[in-house]
Each structure stands twice: as C-alpha cells, then as structure tokens.
Image 1 (tube, helix red, strand yellow):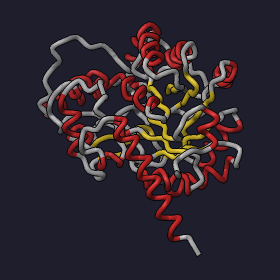
Image 2 (cartoon, helix red, strand yellow):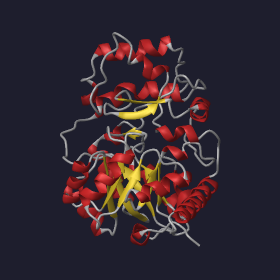
Image 3 (tube, helix red, strand yellow):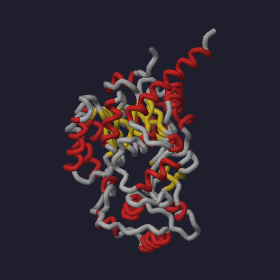
Image 4 (cartoon, helix red, strand yellow):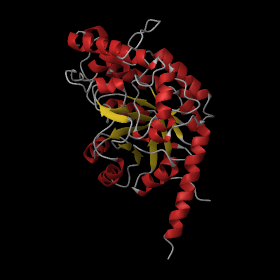
Length: 370
C-alpha cells in the first residue's frame, strides 16, 4: 500500500513526513503519537522551570517517539537590556494609539494582572534558555523561526544528537542557512501564518530545493492543509510538509483564553488574513480584524521594530484574546485557515492527510500510465 515515507522520516525516526508547529503541547504530542512530528513553540515560556515541566509532560505523553521544539533566535547575538530598559524606547504616541484603539473597539480590561507573557521569549537570552532546557528532553529537532541560529547553538544541538531546522523565505537565505551548518530547511511561502516572506510556496519550494542540493532535506510550508497539498509539496521536491495553522482548531488545542479566537478561526476564509508588522514588528500573517484594520487607518503610527512592538502590544493582545469578540483579536494564521472551519481531533486530521495523499498518488499514477 502506498503511503508517505521519505528520507527525512528515517533521519528523524518518524512514520510520516508531516511536521506540526504549535504552541500547544497536547496538539504537538498528539501529532507525534499519530506518526508525524509535533514541534512545540517555546516563545511563550519566560522561565526554564515552566518549559521543563511542559517538556517533561511531552516526554511522558509521546510514547517514546521523537518530537521537536521551536525558538525565535537571531543569528547574531544582540545587545539586550532588561524589559524595563527596552520599555523606555516605546514612544508615548504609540502607547496612546493602542490605548485609544482598545477603547474605540470596546475591548474590556482584564480582571486579573497580566505581565509581558510571551514578550521575553523574543529575546536571545531567553531563546537560549529554551535550547538549554529542551536538550535535556527527548527532542530530535530544533527549529528556528528567524533562520540560522548562532554557530555555537548549532554545535550544541549537534553534540546532543539534535537536528537543526531553519525557516527560509528565499533561496538565498536557504543556501546561507546550509552554509551556516543548518541541517533542514523549512521553505516558508508567504501563505503561511506568522513570520513569512513575499514568495509563494509553489514558487519558493523548488527554488530552495535547487539551491541547497539533494543532500539537504527541505520541508514545504505555507498553505498546506490537505493530503493533496502534501503530495504537491513532495512533487515540488520537498521531503515533507511543515504545517501550523491547520492545528489551531484541533480538539486538543488548549491555549485559547477566550471564545473570540475560536469563533474567528472557525468562520475565517482564506481571504481573511493579512500580512502585517502589527503583531511583532516583523512581517507576519495573522487574521484580519478590526485591530489590524486600525493600524492601516490614516494617522495610525507605523509598527515599531522587534521586540519593541511585542512589548507595546502584549497587554492589548492579552485583553483582546481573552474576550469573546471575534472581531477584536490578534492571532497569527495562514491562508489555509479557510479549511479549518470545524473542531477536529488531531488523529482524525492526520488520518485524513495520509488517506488523501494516498488517493492523490493513486490518481496521478493512473493518469501517467502509457
């Protein structure tokens, strides 16, 4: 029986070359148990103890199978101060705009104190803590959302028997990552949620495959949410599919703090996302809402560079995402969100991906017979 199995499966010890980036540990664990590789996003963890606890849970709930983790780490180690030091660089006009917009949109205040959750995770020092902590667990892959991590981090991972993946939005960047010692390239097209470049997956993936050569595994990312699209990724030369937004409506997803996020995701079409610097200071695709539209209005300030934009909007995002209004949330999501219009268990989604891939392969085999 035909099924999906490529060389990267052997390299990482997984059954299917389907990778799922998610900040939700239950989703990541369920993908791994179903034969793929769950990749846990670590950016929300500010303390090693909290991350260690979650990764211990992952170890205990993945049946001894490998999983990965994802960090946000610049290639060059920056000079960084404390959160208080960075806070002083945020203009008062930007603070006023955020406060006024929240009032205009009718976003209620939180009924509990919230700090800068998720903000510190964008700093190199905290990302390094993520690496140090994760390498004590059953991880087999580290992915970096900002491309090549520093050379010493790559060496640290290799010494621990962990492969290093880096996201790339151009063939040029992909080649540079390989030159820096990265093992696996995630070719992320602009359809993808979160930080993304300007080239579509269909165009980008074969360019990246050609640029890095046959010995470097490439995973296609952006706009992949069905078995047909997994088959298309392999047809483009990739060894697997990197998915993300597909899992936001998984039954196991445990991180939505308010009903507004779920409502927005379930009703969204592929036209309901926008690529903007509002979320983090770098171009990222997220759901189009009244919040993103406010930043496009005449007189609105330009988003600040990373990580200042994160610090500026962290509390606003917590307030919006804790509510029940789908029109006022801040949620990274790719264009494939148009396919995630119901809550589905991870195992069922994985089974559907594999089954449709097999059907697609059989259909293509039939039309290529002489």
